[in-house]
Length: 459
Ligand SMILES: C[S@@+](CC[C@H](N)C(=O)[O-])C[C@H]1O[C@@H](n2cnc3c(N)ncnc32)[C@H](O)[C@@H]1O
Image (cartoon, rainbow, N blue to C red; front, side, top):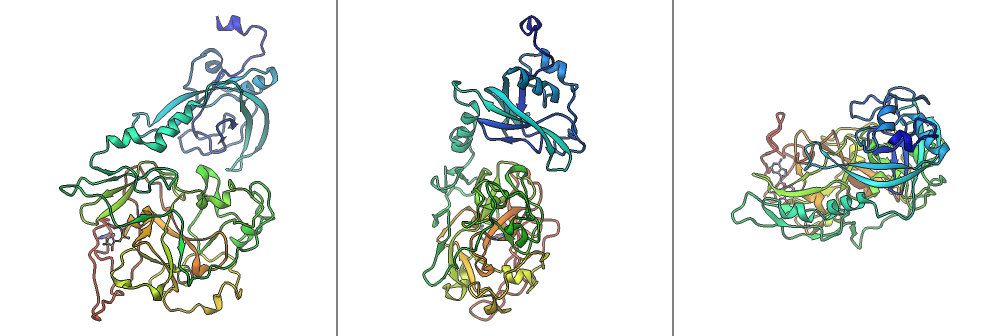
């Protein structure tokens, strides 16, 4: 029947493609897709390209040609999509979405017919030749089913209602991209987190002067050429991120210079990866011995930005009762760069604009950090993240508007691939016996991180 229907057409051509993140070079903007052709992928599910692709009929050709309803094919042979384009045959698009509630970890949606507009060959992110096809959704179709999946995911209402110990549906009151529920199966009766006014951007105290925005790069659209992008030059001559999964930091650095308000590039630029808000579904939960903690429902790939430490930006010496405040984050970027205290020095391959009068570098000394972020009364979800001696997040100073390291943004990144529901943690970095009480006595706090290599004390 099918062969009869397509008599006279040049074979093979594709009836259905599945866009499910199998290829590291795919770009999916809902109505428009840049789809990566078949071949050269290691097919281990880690999306790595390991060889050049060629324009030929692939081994999935028959399957794709004959099975009109087949949604199992992970990719389509390169010749087939070219034939679709040449003959003006639209292709059905099925999208795979990660879903923790599905035993396959995926749900699939049929998202309608797309036209293959053009194709080309280029070097992919792994350096091998890949074929790319630009697909545009045909007008006049029902709205995307994927949107329903994302809507349910964003609201999470149905799932949240079933959460054991749910004490708050959304601690951020809609201020983040995704709601953040809080659960408590420890206390009887269960209590909700309280005493926090949720904010999603830093509040600056009156006596803290934020320097003017630094001059930006002159790139257009997205920054792609590290040789001509002045921001890449500040990062040691290359971009600190790869574009996979919306931007992943390649390695922890002394400081990351991101593109900012005066740059010519747009919001989708890879060098703005930590500026796009929260994208993993986080939950605040009551722990056994550490008060509240945070975990993610989503897999978080290594190097992904997870959240920024948000609170009130203050001068450290003006914070009342620093000792009793568990939510102070001292901005010690400069101290980390120089390995001061117990801080582990990081690779300093960045170009610090030294002696810049505005940045106040000359005023820096080896004393304690001049500024801090106080999340005691105003803050975001990051203030609930606990310490671990073997953490899965790391602290990264990021400069994305001015270039004053004393006032850098504090962003937490995944130190490893983090499976869903694992508690998120970072190393608070206290030096043992460094905390002294008002009575002059050294204070100690037992650590309950549970890591094999636990140091047994936070401080
Ligand atoms: C920034 S807060 C973290 C959120 C806190 N658990 C809460 O309930 O709001 C830091 C405080 O959490 C507790 N904490 C964090 N990590 C801990 C750990 N590994 N062991 C014991 N207590 C911890 C300590 O009381 C610490 O002063």
